[in-house]
Length: 436
Image (cartoon, rainbow, N blue to C red; front, side, top):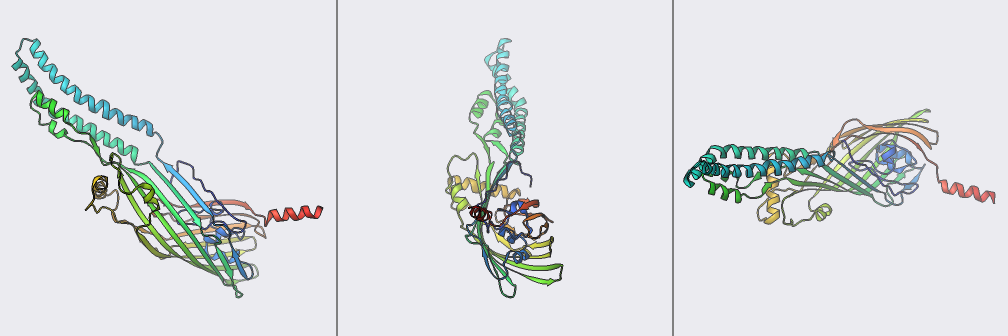
């Protein structure tokens, strides 16, 4: 997915636990380390399920401390938008308004020319009426062409513009990793996340009363119908989608086999999701306020859809090298959006917005009863590392792109060079104490 604005990730972390990865993007140390398992960063245990084995001690627990907070913002389609808006203004003001004014003026001039040439008032009226009948269709056709051009201009402005944000909060003290005496490793994780996307749906521009102008047969009738023209109408709308998820995960990893030079680790993870998926459409020209504000919409969880996803992973580990593969969302669970488009009982802005949603759905721009399929994805990871893994060159690559709950396609690839030092502040303090 092409990004035009900065992608920012903020992480609050402890020395032993960072952030668990979420559906849409890695956060914490994983944003730079990728999905390979590094025992110095617990966040990487949320990538390949088999990597939890690397994080655990010989026996016992390893836990995080403060849950991490991840924030990202992105947007696009703003290049040249000012010039496009200026072009639209020119169409609506110069082409459209001037066409009507020029036609009325030209009609009056025909009558004046008849008077100047010695004709009577009746001759002037007959000449104007004849001019109107001969030219009104051409004039209205020209206006409709201008409206069509304006509609195309609105679509050109609206289609690429979007803004998106996401935030993830990891549950405190997670992930929790426990290795049994028999070297079986269990992992517990929890997080809460929300992602929202705003875009513009372009509707056709129309002018109320324009068809009536076509039926004008005399000058007085023409003036009346031009004066009675309504406002420019369009269903162009702000379209917002959001997905919020409470996720709880249980993971397991173990050593499948081992030789003097290498080991094969395998693992799996069950993710329990409570997803709230919603969409909201607001006609931009509507003056009344809808009953549900944008803020209420983003934080609401009116429609909860539950599901379980399964992740599987394997790791080939050597002293200075490791290679892994992860299959995420193997079972591809499906979640339902809150349904929109039921306009019965609505009034005012809510009714206008609902009718617009039905119109956009009929043209295939949106789905009134949308579902989200959590697609399967394969990720490969590799790392070259020092013996203690304090220094490593690694990365990960999503083999296939998949769509997030808002319909945006993503595919991550990360290459990193990292350095970790265990308890650096404590080591410095001890060295200074020895000197004294």
